[in-house]
Amino acid sequence: MRIRALLGALLAALTLAPGAAAAPRPIVRPADEASKSGVELGSELYAGNCATCHGIAGVGTPIGPRLRGVGALAPDFYLSTGYMPLGSAHEQPIRVRVLLDKRERDAITAYVASLGKGPAVPTPDPASGDVAEGRELFTEHCAGCHQVVAEGGIMPGAKAPPLNRATPVQIAEAVRIGPYVMPDFSKKDITDAQLNSIIAYVRYAQDPYDAGGWGISHLGPFSEGMVTWLLAVVVLVATCVLLGKRMRAS
Amino acid sequence: MKPRNWLMAALVAARTVRRPHHESADGRERIVARSEPDPGAEALVALLLVLTALAAALFVVAYGLDWSTQALGGALGGALALLAAALIVTAKRLMPDEEIPELYPDEEHPEEQEKVDQIVRESGSGLTRKRLLGTTAGIAGTALGAALLTPALSLGPFADTSRLNETPWRRGTRLVDRDGKPWSADDIDDGAFYTAFPEGADPDAIASPLVMIKLAAPDIHLPPERAGWAPEGILAYSKICTHAGCAIALYRNPLFQPVEPSHALVCPCHYSTFDAGAAGNVLFGPAGRPLPQLPLMIDGSRDLRAAGNLSGPVGPAWWGVRSRPTSS
Image 1 (cartoon, rainbow over the protein chains, first blue to last red):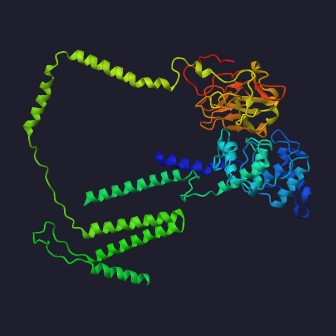
Image 2 (image 1 turned 120 degrees about the horizontal axis):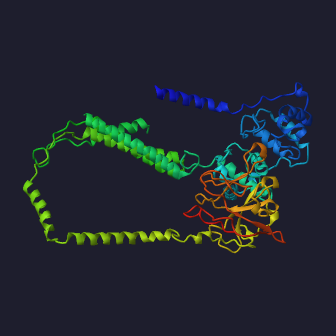
Image 3 (image 1 turned 90 degrees about the horizontal axis):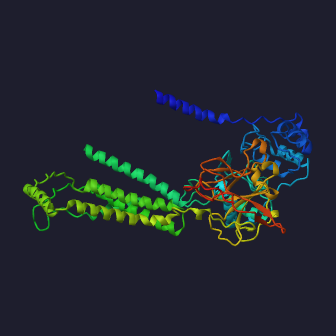
């Protein structure tokens, strides 16, 4: 009876756990949205969805950073990944369903970019990068947290997200911004050419060649072989036990 | 030919090659009871063997045509499974099966047992000084054990640990990167982190590698005796974790301090977390003491140099590490 109660509690905890995170707030849209565009639409969407934390016209508040001078790069990153708008200012932004459509995101980006001089949305060219060099650079700068095939990892007080859905532009933006607790890298630390190689490697790691057919977090054929052997040993032992039982019975 | 014709041909072949049963060639009486012929089972075994051959041939084809690993594994695995099936059918239906119990034989020489016991007992009667021999055997065993343990001394300093406190850092030692190029204060940006080594020293020595970061003045909380250790906000700590000696490879760098975790250097092995702005004190994890800090100075050509030695012993803890005063 007690075991059943424990199981029930565990099940309840598991099903309720996701509800613990603050739900994203619904998007506030101007009534005459269709008739507006560009900076004008952006400023209204900003006032309805961003100003609570980032302050009027991006001046910042105690719970949200100042946005004057971040350019188009940061808003494009945070909006296209679904990091913003954030349910609670004290949470780590994570990749969720994007609630704003492309036109709205572009409008807010244009508005934030108009608040001060800042970097434009980068235009990386991973095709010109070298996957092998990218792997070296990724191992040096990124793999400590994001794991060597970009599966993501943890850090005290934060999660390093997996990069399986990151687009080249988002990777280029994240390297320059350093979202949440990630270090940021200037063009002196990682040049644009090196960044192209890193993106080329991350694109490769998003769908690497798994020789064994069963990725298991892409840890490589050795781990796959070990797992296969462990499973095969269990099957073999079970077969032997069954045979032995039948022999004894007959 | 169609596959069905092949199948028929195989069955016919199995029937025709069947050897007629007759008594043993030399007319002696049989030992194994005659078993009923089972042409159906024979045909099944032949079919399974033919399928085994086909699956094995498929493996060769798959290998030649560079098919996927899964096709290769499936073909070879299938061939082995079919062969196993053929052997199982052979064993179950074509081999005679009988159970013949056989009793263990009686013990042959019970009186010999007692004799052996007696021989062992009487063999020891020539020993008159058992204690002497026992003691010397004990001494020999102890000495041999000690001899075997002696090489363990090479595992590390035993009585004198002062060597572990030696570092290549001296006042004025230049900080260089992996390729030996001096680090300039202008190379260091806030938000990123850098690895540095002492110029002209062994980069593999445990006290050599440093992790360097740059923080804004409000984020730096060094104790008063370390005032001036971080010129222009540049801080340098030993890159070797004080818990188990892994390299500090993670830097927690909050974008917006008020709502995010603070600046910290983190070891990826067991997540020991050191306060990057406050003298490397332990914030979290198994490390028992702060990350040693290196006082820095910037010379006339903007190169970074050590302004002294590291603030404490580098690397994983060993006995006596807490009792030793920090050298500077």
